[in-house]
Image 1: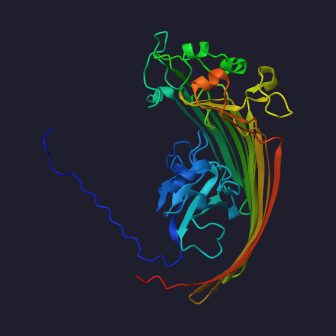
Image 2: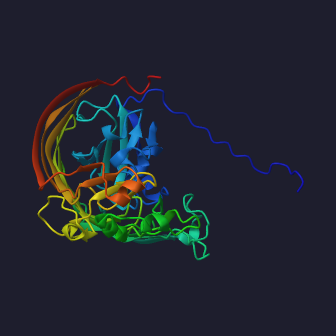
Image 3: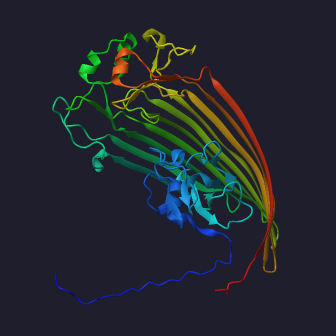
Length: 475
């Protein structure tokens, strides 16, 4: 192709103010249109955080804040602060799980009206965390009825092979299959008026059906090593150790299924009680279940745990305008997470010659490590377990304008209840394959009985802030 002359030239320029005179904080906000139209893989609202100035994705070693299969990341890093220092809020009510410093759950992106991040020099009304402040404003209805239905689908036919599952041959000469991946996200929302110009509603449902194969590639016992086992207990344990299925006869390769199911329901109502009063109500409930095959370090399939959760948040906000110079907002609400971790492979340990000291039966097999091939099977250790964390808060913020001063004052009362329990099937360690063959373990540990705990936290805070507005002409 030859060069041609320019037919049209469009130049777009823009400048940003050096100083934002409307606020003392640094950060940014996404309005409803951006939130609703920006493409997000997985439709997780926390993924908006790394798109803001100073934000970045949590690393895979970030513990419980790292991205979770089917449920996205539970936090992000901002302005150099750790992901565990971010304070997440919905309509001004805390959304954090106190026990893990992470968001309790991901409200449906369809219900988000504004996503705002303050990552430094934020207002005195915010406390608790040293990192960024994330406040999500939820959608309400309008005088016109609007609805939406959606269905997103993705499967392994659209994906390349997992790096850790390259094309190879099994012992029968068959090529290993592509790791299974099937994801369906679907739902609807509807909003409109209950009473024109006075009362509005908005509701939504979102479901997720996520089916994925978790690639596992571990050293295991060879046929000769299995035949050389002499200890009767170790012989019983051979049934739980998968045989080698690669060409070398030394490794067990598999891709057990790890399904995730999520159903989330949301209702939102806004009422103009009178010209000077606005009442807003929001409630979201989520039921979720997922199967984890190797979350506790197991190197071979066969010992998953099921993690079922109920998560919810409720917020009530009432705004009253006393005068053009004085506005008050009182808000209250709670967020709650209830989650259990239940082993799915239960055995009668006494029948195979293992007495771990626990009275309940059947229980999970102890988590057993055989050094050498790097084999860990059984367990998961520390399960079954569970926790319920409820955070309740009532807060009030008044804003008073006088001249070029913006005065804010108010406070918050917060109460947290944390209940949990845990059981343990124990842990065995064999220092070598030879030690396992002879039944010579080098270490065993267990916590007997059910360990239950209750914690209560009360917090009261108050603040006064005077912001001096320098005017729109300051450059």
